[in-house]
Amino acid sequence: MKKCQFCGHLNPRQEARCPECGQYYSKIIESIEHIAAEEAFNTWPARVQRIMQASNKKHACHQEWRYFFGTLTTQAKFTLLFIMLFVFALMVIVL
Ligand SMILES: [Zn+2]
Image (cartoon, rainbow, N blue to C red; front, side):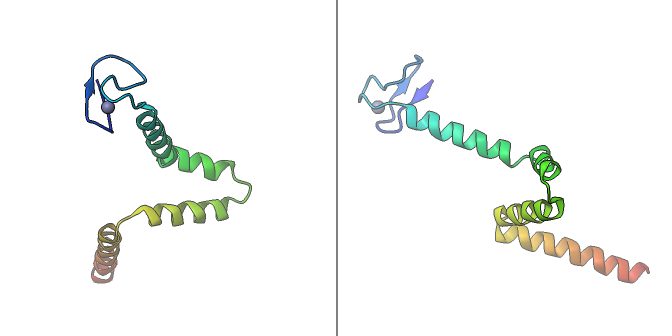
């Protein structure tokens, strides 16, 4: 089932064009492909593969880390910081 992004008409058939308003669905297909490509790019195996294939592994690793950190939300960054602080505090108490 395809949903037209222009008029919202639901089309059960596999057509490239909306029968209601005549607009093409290609923009939806394009955006789905873009999302799929981005998801494939952001998987951990893909990251590891990029690092392994790079000539300068240290630089590639740093770049991947920076990219990963850039995708995190502020809340996720704070959560990560709190986990690190908690682990650090635990180590200080135990040792
Ligand atoms: Zn339509």
